[in-house]
Image 1: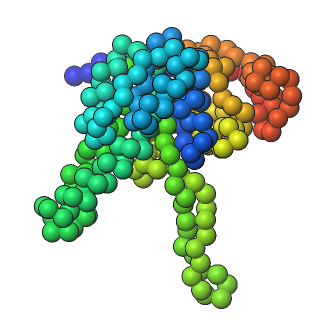
Image 2: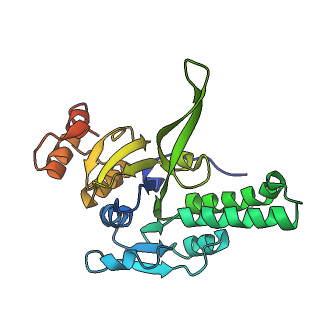
Amino acid sequence: MGQFKKATKKQAKLRAAIFGPAGAGKTYTALAVASGLGKKVAVVDTERGSASKYADRFGFDVCELKGRSIDDYVEAIKGAGDYDVLIIDSLTHAWQELLTEVEKLAKTKYRGNTWSAWSEGTPRQRSLVDAMLCSPCHIIATMRTRTEWKVGENSRGKTTIDRVGLAPEQGKGIEYEFDLLMEISQEHIGHVIKDRTGKFQDVLIEKPDAKFGKQMKAWLEDAEVDLVEYAKEVFDGKEVGSVVETAKVEKF
């Protein structure tokens, strides 16, 4: 029987995701934030050596995956246990590979029934999520985006299809697995759309970097950090967007 003990944030590891379109700077942002979270950084790279292009700016080890199956990801994640921070760049390829696997299963084993094929696909997706959640490292995952559409009806009763925004290109509900979810634009502005710390929700951050990583680490370690001073550091004292407005509210 398991024993209970007092929960503290010092026992917790960050689970963060950064998603955005091509050219937004997902890989660079992940490396920059990771440099503030820990000294030993590893990258699982499925983006054809994208991370290594920044080896002159950041210190990290890299594992370039040749295969992109769930098993390849899980093996790499489990092999990174000695690092402070693990970047998974990109988590989207695991989902794309799984979709292909499920489609093949449907055709070869389930007579074209995709619903039945997911009886094997869903546990595989869960094994990837479990590997991330059980890792002793801080995790930063990058994801590509897809356009989300909503089918509705106008005042004349005609069907409409409206663009409602961008969503991570991964399994439905993946956002629930992360403490922090940041959408980054092609202008390199990070929008925190989910934040379990309660301190950065809806904040806009221009070019998130090591300072932001240090803030997250400080929260995990119960340190008190002045969010106003953080905003001043990031924006050189300029009041930009909602960051400074949020910072005026409280310290942590």
